[in-house]
Image (cartoon, rainbow, N blue to C red; front, top):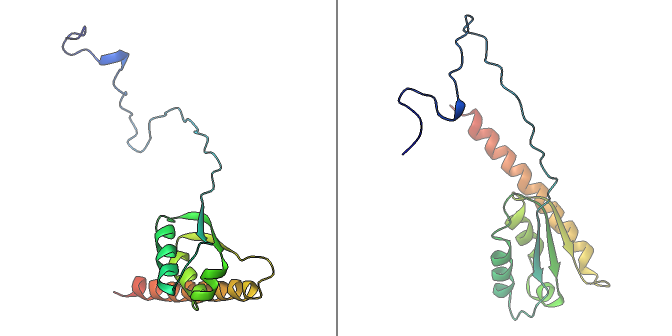
Length: 143
């Protein structure tokens, strides 16, 4: 069994002496645990071959569903995704705006829709964040 006798404190532990002042906290040694600087980056790859908008939406949802509380979401978009999905900026913003601190949209070089898509994502992120803030502000002040 064990080598200690009944009533003996295990492993050399002793009771903390009672203080005469009940507001005084016992002094304990503070240890500092170093926290590494880690950034979670999620990459959504929409550069494959798509035949319709539903396939683009499904791929976006499947690849971004684990993007919870991350630092950066990088969305790589190919020509098929641009051709088949008209509301792609709104879809990207709606899918990850609450989960990521920054959203990067990468479009193939030379595509004139790239800057428009990036501006659309930024616009919808602003709209969704403002709407979310208004909704949480109303719900927290009610009552």
